[in-house]
Figure (cartoon, rainbow, N blue to C red):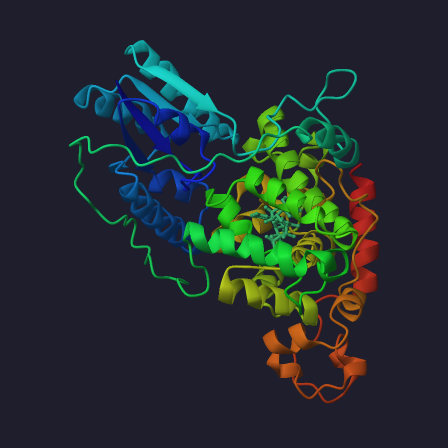
Length: 464
Ligand SMILES: Cc1cc2nc3c(=O)[nH]c(=O)nc-3n(C[C@H](O)[C@H](O)[C@H](O)COP(=O)(O)OP(=O)(O)OC[C@H]3O[C@@H](n4cnc5c(N)ncnc54)[C@H](O)[C@@H]3O)c2cc1C
């Protein structure tokens, strides 16, 4: 019997249930579908695609060790995937296909279409839950409904994942099957694979080493350090999780193992696992509330908000020229590196939607186009949370003050001065209000905080 493993955002060989189970068959081949037109229509940018391409290249090397040939196919749109897989099954007498489920609507529609089509051809289909710790629909309220607020979800989620089995090992290499595909390096749409290769190494080993390093050396400081952009206080694993170089189950078990190493680590590990739970939560939201996949606010009534067009403000935000040092430093970091610290994602998202009253969907799109870890459920969830249109939304009257956020989370200005070098000579006292110092060449604030706050309150109140 010949089995096919269809890889997607699960580009690993460890803890991969679809690969592991398929390897019990007589012979196994693997495939990957390059859907550039579809991904671009989802606003995936060069950094994310380049990372994915390198992650795929690494997977092909891992599979070579296991003697599993990998076929890379061009299917520009998801709707072409079922036929492509069907053809591959027919041409290689494949009896069964194994894959891991994904939850955003377009991905789910594709996965369901693949299953239906292959079954109609007489091919057996085996689907697995491995992109989340708890499957969407398995964490429900007492009324049997999905949670719309994180805290009660988290309580139930902790119970649901308490017995999560250990991660699977890598399967043993198969015997030489004689099957082979033309070897080709993944390349698509003019994206240079080596973009950011030094900054974001994409190999499975690097992801695991980073997980180990974080949990061994840094997790105990996570509760305090996670909010400070000047220190490496978080794991930096988001890009690996987005393409599935490591699994959430590997994260969970590695974190539990660390807890056993001393009570000093418990708080850090618990806090970190709650962030992993946010990732699951937003996957449940896109799976169970279809409308958020269509660009709608989770709270439908917020779709009527009359956002401003404001091209000048929009440009200033994108370019890190708002006159608010922390916002500008964060946007410049994003533009230069493809990454932004979580606290700063909240600060710039709230600034765009509350201070400038610009539609959260434009910010969401800009993030997807620039982030190396661009991930629809987390990005959509984060933007809607910040704009007060989503689940668990910040009440609309809670508006971060970007000046005090800077004073609180980057008090010495190490991060801010690094990305906004115009502030090098501004005394610490004026760092977050440089226009008051009289010595700064730096751009003046594009909007006054008090004015913006009042305007945002009136905007949201009038449209409740
Ligand atoms: C406006 C906005 C947009 C965002 N866009 C994305 C995105 O496109 N891709 C993405 O992976 N994350 C996104 N996040 C969530 C979060 O900012 C990043 O996951 C985090 O900064 C990644 O850094 P880390 O790996 O060091 O996180 P850690 O603090 O080490 O957390 C560990 C892991 O938990 C998950 N996680 C942490 N925080 C969140 C969260 N708030 N929501 C969902 N998952 C979380 C991530 O997978 C992360 O890698 C966004 C947040 C906001 C506010």
